[in-house]
Image 1 (cartoon, helix red, strand yellow):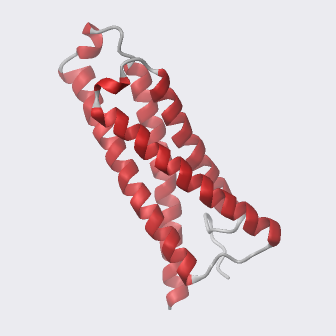
Image 2: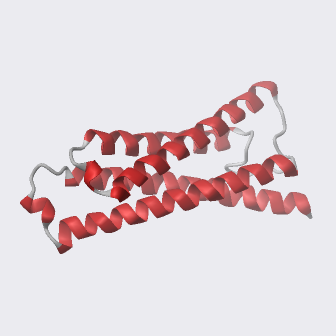
Image 3: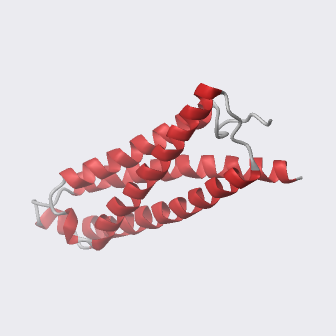
Length: 156
């Protein structure tokens, strides 16, 4: 059994999944608490993508907790294949949502200076939410990379 950082079924994998879930939840909470987020479709898409990431990361964190409690090895090719596909789908959606939201934020804040004109928009909260989303995506990319290499090492 290979044991490297972020491997499913060990403590570091659980920590990665918990932090993914926390950062995605923080992104949703900050965006939902800000006023005017529904004016841009990309911000709504960010909430939807982070919601999916919360569900995915929470589910895998629960699986890691179960594996740690019963000392079960989660390193089967079928399970790791499912995890890697789920990680890739969630990572692509999270990166697309974060990037599109960041692009809209640049447009609102720097290009059109709409944030200065409309004081009711919570532009700073939008930026914080987008930063949390990028952090959640970065942690998901780390665990996805780890699982991919683990799957490759099990296949050979």
